[in-house]
View 1 (cartoon, rainbow, N blue to C red):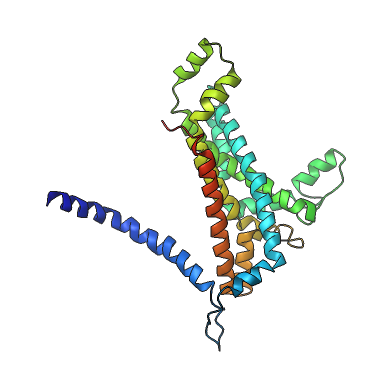
View 2 (spheres, rainbow, N blue to C red):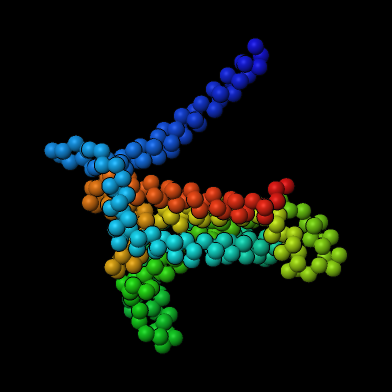
Length: 291
């Protein structure tokens, strides 16, 4: 009887979190999947079952494929650089430096700024002729460039903003992990004749793999949920050169009011995120050393 009471007590403790998880995660996901098989309801026409028609339309939608490839390029360009810069910054500010607290604050400041505020700041930086970037270019006698209005530079410009904002956030996780590693490991490695590079590659990096896995999954989610910067800075232009998947879903759902097609795109986005996260876990599983 005592065991059953403990079990009931445990489930009651879990109940609030389970209700919130089901209401705000599982139910919306299942509802989105369900609505993707129906047409969008109109004022004089109820939604009807259309099967996989929305998915067939999606496969023939050139804007979807443009947004999909843009998002892949965006993720491949931002995730490795953000994580690498975060690790370098964490290693730097983990040392005993003069003004170490100021450096940590400076690196972390972009993270606490609202995303819309960051987008507006960089929108000013990228302003042709008058922005900070063009002012530096003029000082170096470089031609003026419309960074957000040119197809070849719009997406890289957004990627730079994302790296600037997220690197400091990921640095905090690496810094916390570094502070949990005993300094005696480094001292022992140096006494054994290991170089700094060997210590980093053979000892420090494997110990940081759990943190790296966590950071990579968060960076992946952030790369595919980016919408604020696109909405403020480029609105997907020029000619969909900077359109990302979530921004396209936002446009379809709230500008064109095609909620069923937006649900279809959302299902595909969830599947892509799940697949990439699963592959990351499988690939890094053998390389992750938990303490």
